[in-house]
Length: 250
Image (tube, rainbow, N blue to C red):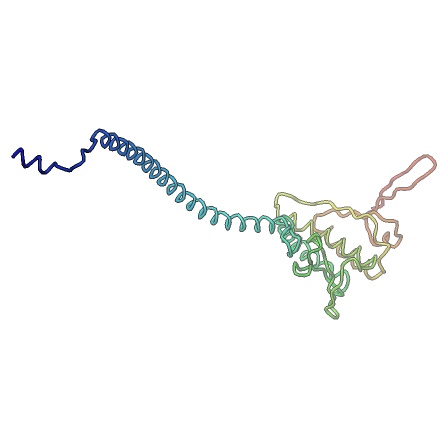
């Protein structure tokens, strides 16, 4: 048996097991280091995946919020009349236009009588305002004769007075109808009758007399002599050397 083992070991090189064990320990240590690196990379990869998923959610939310923001931004610009390429009309003016149209409608009821159905007033349509910063409360004049439309600024002095008088009366009507507790019992009109021809002046006085008959006091301040015969109760104010004097003529 011993001889057999010797024969088998004959010619064989003796291996240094201590060196192999040292190398094994070194490799095991490197393995531990690589395992720690691997675990660290796995942890970083997991964190990156979590961050990526969160970024995806944020990106989708940003997209929906962006659409919502753009919609609200356009709505804000529209409400404030600053939307590019559109009429410069803010929401407040839009609401005012609705009341303004009511005033014009009430005014036209008397205006067409005073001008013998020659023309009436219109609130300029939004489509005709353009984008040059018009107020939105612009008015046009439309003819009964040929349906022509022109700017209210083209009215003559007499026509302008009738239009202004009708608008004042229309405004009083709308205020009283809208706020039932408010009554406009007194109205003063300062000048303007001198710019009217006799026929228009008579028609305007007739309408004012009708108003005065509805428990409303209408006062006219004027230097037109022709009005003296058409007004029943008059308050005269005369200047003198010792000051002004006033007296009633009933």
